[in-house]
Length: 107
Image (tube, rainbow, N blue to C red; front, side, top):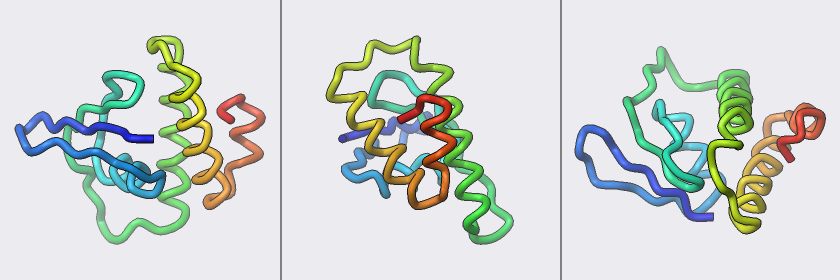
């Protein structure tokens, strides 16, 4: 799934092509979802060091919560829902959140 990132500071836009790059961008920047597959980058996240496993897990959990809360604001196609489901399944498996995502109907 391709996801478009637009920067508020006027920087060149960026398109992610893989789940890992999408998670990297969502982890690196504070964003607001504009459409089904596009985000507006507000600012860069401030890190006090390198993000560890628990920090990445917390950010992924936050992304899933925000996505599920905003889900009714967008008109997702089956293709887009399949892409988001794949993203949350892949990343959830990597960070041990699959059970939580299934209980909360994320995937």
